[in-house]
Picture 1 (tube, rainbow, N blue to C red):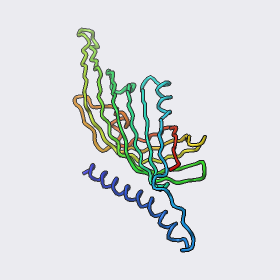
Picture 2 (picture 1 turned 90 degrees about the horizontal axis):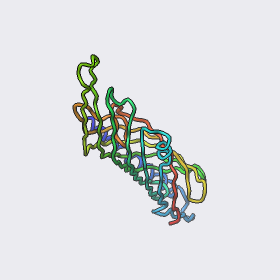
Picture 3 (picture 1 turned 30 degrees about the vertical axis):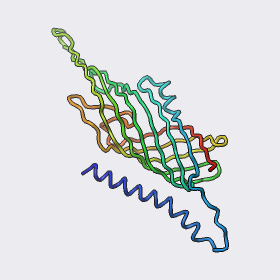
Picture 4 (picture 1 turned 90 degrees about the vertical axis):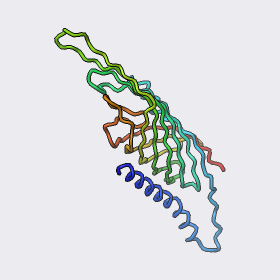
Length: 232
């Protein structure tokens, strides 16, 4: 039932975004007198490619994670946005479990729709929703130590392959043009878990692209560089 509720929420949000994209254009055209010629907004207004440089910097500074993420964005009628993102990650969280080493690694993608708001000639603002999916593996070693020293330390290694997870995201984005088609911006995300493959006896701790499994909602932020091809 929880999964169905999330899906209905996602479908309702999608309809809201589509309505926002269509209504402003219709309102602008309908309010103009018949004698005024309306400038045609191109159907395909913008195609962009993005790199998450925040994850690159974090991987250089921290020894607990290595992440790479790229994305693409297509804008229709200068309002409706189609977004796709792909990333790979290796996570080595400290203190994931007591007396255990833990690592998860894999790939993930996100797809979704958004609405673009032109603040001025240099600044843009976006509202969007995403569906995310991750395919990954995890591994580790559990150590059981005899406090008396009578028994040898017991090691229990584990490794699980082909694990899956899926979630939704609400995304707020802001960006600024720094040179011609080059933009710098950031995303604020709120991730909501749909479902993931539970594991026993030791469950998955962290999911590439999502975060820790015991958090049903995960806030996140990332920095990106984008180059936009805007002349169509």
